[in-house]
Structure formats: structure tokens, C-alpha cells
Length: 132
Image (cartoon, rainbow, N blue to C red; front, side, top):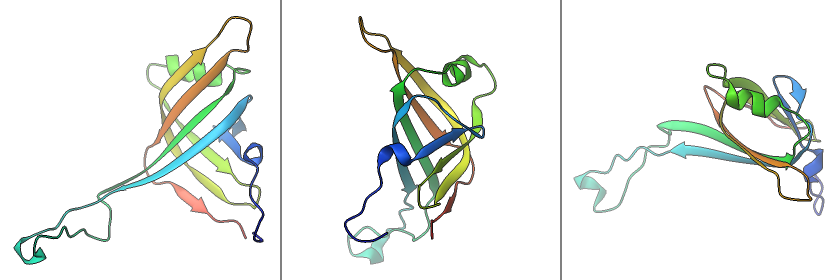
């Protein structure tokens, strides 16, 4: 991407089970790796960490205006809470994998649109294909 150019958030497309979710305004991706502490006496008091992570995870949070019952329906599901999710970037990059729906919050304030927030956590390997 040329210097000085950024990505407009509305151009990131979140797909749930292969289809875009209507009404999503904000998408957040957190990539985490839990370190493995291998400190010992010969570390001379300094913490030493392995280069590999013990557990890797990707968390996605969404918010927007409620226009679909897809996420709400999943939230009420007793046994089907893991779905394929993908975030597609305008440059062709894609983050994809199976995600567990952790939370779904809906707010309906007086005289305003009903909004939602949703948190997803990866289950298994997450793939990242960078754009060209």
C-alpha cells in the first residue's frame, strides 16, 4: 500500500458462515500468543521466553446496527456456536478460521436504532493470506 494511504473500516467485510453480516459498523481483530516462560537460574534474574507461543488465538469483536438475526440466533443456540468466519480486506488479504461466539449484546435505547456487540474467539488454526 502506498505511503499516506489507509484502509477505510467500512471496506473490511466480515463474513459469517460465508455470508456478510448486515449492519456491522466496527470490526476489531486481536492476535494473541501466550508466552512460555523458560527462565532458570542461568537466566541471571531475567525472564526468558521461548520463541514459540503456548497458545495462539485470534479474537474478533463486532458492533453495529441490528439488521439481521443471524448473530442473535447463534447466541441462543445450545450446541452450534462455532462457525467459519472471514474478514476480507480491500487489498485481497483475508483472515479466516472457525470462531466461537462468546457474547452477543443488544441495546435498544428509546428513539434510536437497536445496536449490537458481539465477541468471537478462534477455535483451531486461523489462516492469514496477505494481499498483494
